[in-house]
Length: 149
Image (cartoon, rainbow, N blue to C red):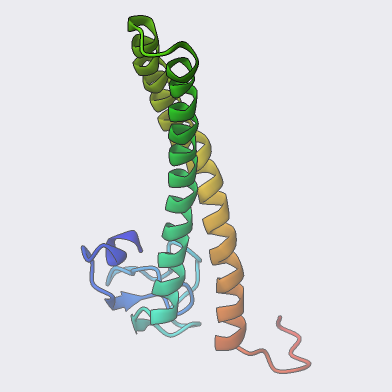
């Protein structure tokens, strides 16, 4: 799906009719959900709603990473300015400014890449999960009293 969002893969082709995972011509079952084209007819295009829900997932993942990175840098600038404010512009306060700023830069980048990625991924996946359930419920309404569900 990421390749489709970035324009590196087509949104049309041969896809599982349930989960829209790309299917090779020789595949009898979907490698993602395990459904057979005999049970769920193939799709030749991914619905725009599915593409949009994955776009939102990527947006939320990035938002979490950028928020942690910029928040860390903002704290770093504030902490780095403190020696300049309270001690004046001496050689050691200027050196400490750059040292503190560099430390916060490295720390916020590492924190954003670890914690931000983890939080963003969970947030994005939970969003897609909820939207996917609503999409499937609307797409495949189950008749009342159907014992197969």
